[in-house]
Amino acid sequence: MKALLIDDERMARREMRRLLEAHPEIEIVGEADSGHAALSLLPALRPDVLFLDIQMPEMDGFEFVNAMSAGGHSPQVVFCTAYDAHALRAFEVNAVGYLLKPVDPARLAAVIQKLHDPAPSDDEAPQDEPPLRETDRVLLKGEQRTWFVPVRSIYLLQSEGNYTHVFFEGGKVLLPRSLGTLEQRLSLPIFFRANRAQLINTRAITDVTEWFSGGLQATLASGDKVEISRRQAALFRKQKGL
Picture 1 (cartoon, rainbow, N blue to C red):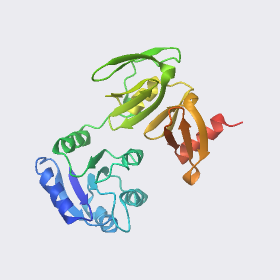
Picture 2 (picture 1 turned 180 degrees about the horizontal axis):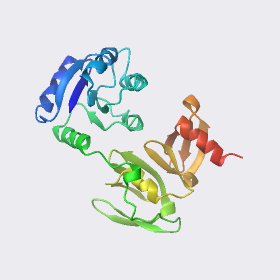
Picture 3 (picture 1 turned 120 degrees about the vertical axis):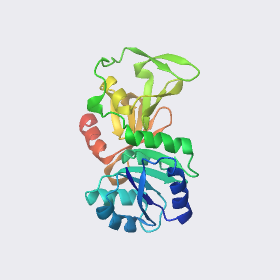
């Protein structure tokens, strides 16, 4: 698997090279110290995966992903950054992983495993589990405790790669299932996909305001604020508007 390292800090690129030595299946075919430089390398190198910094001058990591997609390139993306504030946005652009610097070797190994064995698409999700009803109760098994809660008490589901945080009245739990799989089971009118990484219970919404670029921001009874993407905002207005 061919990899391109993109980071404006030479020491960060060197450290990633050192860490990837433990994974001989990853062949580093090039480095770039800026988004613009990386764009010029893509046609010739044709990498399968990018290890991409976010905070870079002139063109940040997300701007680079947009420019790359516009150019017809679609390698997998692993963000490597010193900041945790961009994790949700990273999954919205379908990043395979989000690594915080200094990169933990175990976390890197888990991300590389995902590169080799990606989560099944929603179309490939198991079909032997019947959709739930709003009146059902479900088992939610955490590390220390198991809850048996009404479906209607679940107000937010948030993707964390192949895992999903499920927030419900009284607690939260991290489940080893993708958001797409859980969305299939929760195919109820009360649940709405706000963006690529979050599914919300519309009955938990207390306020909706206009947001950037045609999107919306929903405030939940819990106090959580969820951005409804521009595309999903159009659907939300159609479904919920008079």
